[in-house]
Amino acid sequence: MATEGRKPLISGNWKMHHNHFEAIQTVQKLSYQLTSADYRAVDVSVHPPFTDLRSVQTVLDADEIPISLGAQHCHWEDKGAFTGEVSPLMLAKLDVAYVIAGHSERRDLFGETDEMVNAKVKAIIAAGMTPIMCVGEHLEEREAGVTEERVSSQVRAGLAGVTSEQVAAMVIAYEPIWAIGTGRTATPDDAQAVCAAIRKVVGDAVSTEAASAVRIQYGGSVKPTNTAELMAQDDIDGALVGGASLDPDDFSRIVQYHLAE
Ligand code: 13P
Image 1: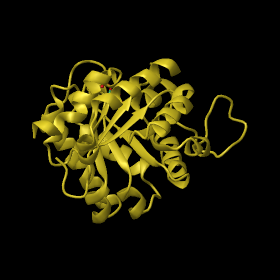
Image 2: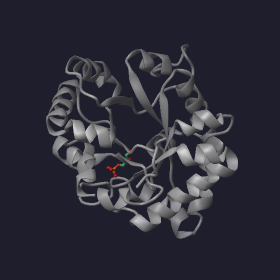
Image 3: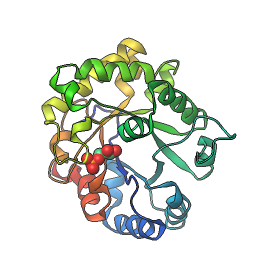
Image 4: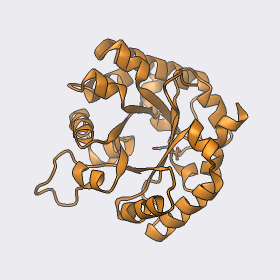
């Protein structure tokens, strides 16, 4: 795991699952399972759909639960004629701490480009929140041996014009697309190799300070049974969890990987 100074961040991306009643129940059950020792060891965020954010925020606030609220997406403009979109300022007003930018589902299904991801990263930071910028290769790219090239170009484009201090405080999630929701996980060695390559690109493109401070998550079929070995890798500082984060028992076991250390 993670060098001194990079506190692990385990994030649950609920995608388009859980209505606001289910979201409240999930976060409450999660809070019963997690202890102050867990929160000392690991930062935890949950990323429900937009319609759940206010309800989840109210529960976290009222019960003083130290789980950070996250969003899955936002627009880069503060306001305007963008039907269906949500602005970073609206999320910040709801005490959202982390916003995912450039998830592969947004890139592949909704046409998000590297330029859009870069605009969002800057807007999220400007609104006082932390971006979790996702990068990752398709199966054909992995098979063609261009994984690092693909991921490096996403990192460079996504971080263009972001300052060293800002990059140091943000999160990059490496999610190999072929491992998302498929039950296939990158081996810890493969995941480590790509995360190390990402850190190197940040060093080359931004600064060595930013490279040693930026937190890099792995995502793609993370489960209670594989978290500890992924988290044991030097350049993996957290996990971005999809399917297994919907169940509070599974997600709390993932957060509690640190007990096995
Ligand atoms: P799964 O954990 O379901 O593979 O999803 C990963 C992911 O896309 C998280 O953002």
